[in-house]
Image (cartoon, rainbow, N blue to C red; front, top):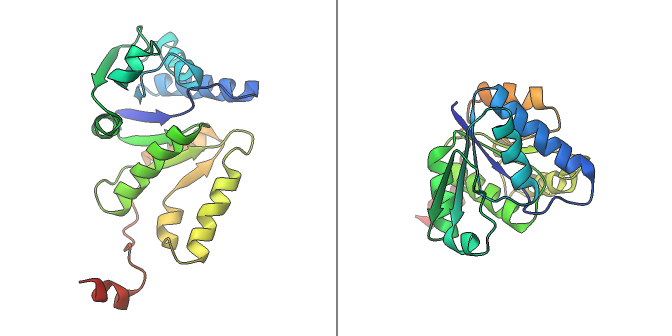
Length: 197
């Protein structure tokens, strides 16, 4: 593992603990001698995690669409800033650069990016670990929704268990380093799968 992609809010949230955990994650990434890959912003939790990596002597690589550069939210002090044409290009480039994906608290963009990576993995387009780093129970309701997807047979149980959720950084990094992807079939009903052919 050489680089970790972090998805997180372009806002800092309403609790100091969100910023504290973003800083702790950035420091840990640098301590582990890993590069940070992220959305390239200088605002919110995005800016905090990048600054923490850089201040700890680590490498921070930003990937940002040109539109956001024009809005003047690009971080100009990064190890490397790549400017792309669209959000779709951004996701693909971040996927290419990173070996694992971690979501800190955030909004629509954070969930969109993480769930696209989970979908790609489900479809066999990648086998990289995906984790939700919880802060003060932020992701507990989302995990309940994912559990309901399993209960209602929209998601394979093995794919649910393949997704890490927790608050402990030591446990997160141990899980990522030892990660072995699940090979669950997306189709849980073999007859239905055959009917689609």
